[in-house]
Image (cartoon, rainbow over all chains, first blue to last red; front, side, top):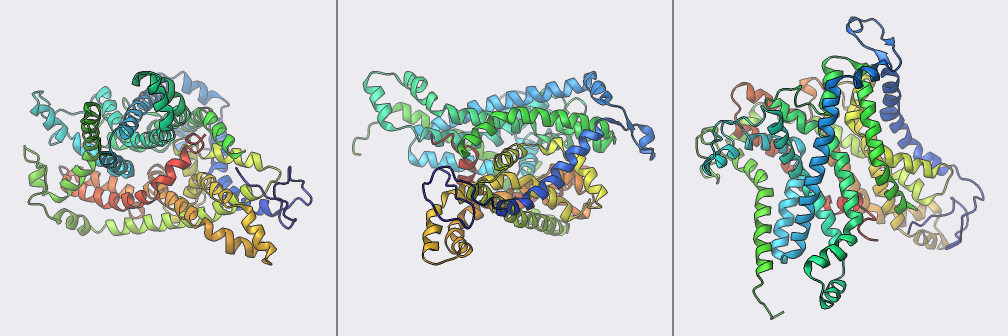
Length: 314
Length: 281
């Protein structure tokens, strides 16, 4: 599908098999230099700095100007024998898996709804989803914090109306209910992407196959599991993977909820914890070590996604 | 067409769909509704679901603080710089990988794909140190460099699809008719790429406009805040004197509405870009 041309200034040979490099052109290298330069400066250099720093000790003395001290892998050792680290890592992974799972299940259900209803209803549903999707993260957070406000939030009001006493209930005080609120928000933000992607997959399934299966006596349930599911499996795998990766990086959401009055140490996830280590207490060695852990985790998770995209390129 | 039977299954699905729509749209509606109501109404015991007796007073109060316009200016400066350089760099690179086959191409593509997955959360401490050593903390350039690097990989990938979608035969036909390769490119291929450039540009715009993590670390002075930081600061300042939710919602609306409009323009292209290949065979 990708049309590759022979290098510049050679004759056109449409459809010719393996392009022979008659005169290897330098043009493509000039073309990628700017992109590579900015990536090396903004990502490459910090990455190297981070590896180096993760082997340095930044203690109290360094805050008063002493150069940091080389300590090898001691930061990693200290980090991964620390109960607080494991608590943060465990919470982050649990949060990310639970959120991704809920998002994908609801997203698929919404996509099925989209294909089950008539045009007008579908449009209404799609517009609602688009509006939620388009909301900038910070604006969404302020709205949700207002909805869950302990004093005048509409959630407490509604729950009290149906007979539960939620008057002045503070949702952000307890870690578990803090994460419940965070999950509601993250799922609300993420479902539209899953719903639209899966719906696009559903529209690719031809009517004839479904009708043929129905004529052969397949029940709706059988049709769903024997036809629909296998057909949308590739999309499903990609969106699930992306959700897992994205739900690891929920810095802005958690930070904003913490701003609204939650205890920091019991609600920190990886992003906010690194922020507190690095910017808060200037412990760059530990912050770097933990950052590298996050990067390795992300790259490992991204592997299948990248392979999938590459297949498209070839 | 004429055979309209009442089907309970479909009816039920429609009801559920409407309920889901309401649930998803409600926060957005509540933001707009609250932004129009005075704080006295918002803090009364029963909520008002329609903005009767509403006014633009909250918006006026937000503007009166005088901090919105500088933040808007900062956001515009950073975002436009990011979009311009990102499009230029990504366009050149996309050209390289879709029109040339060169040594190192596969490595470059692989690197680009992995880099686009790197989270800011894993790099921002190091990026903060980098910008502080370059004396670029609290500057448009400093943030723009980091944003271009964050957005350029996916933009390359997006544009690559567009460039590959223009058949090389078109250019070759123009060259047979006597145009040089450069002329053929700019007269034939480039105009066909316009939609791709617009879509990628809006994508870069949204990413830079909404970014929070890097901005929080690099832009620590109040006068250099972008809109997301401004909104956060606005909430915090308001919380110090018993949050005025009407004003906070007005501020949120100001941040959200332009983004929503832009987003609606580019949405279709974004979905297909992210899951490309998974949808169609």
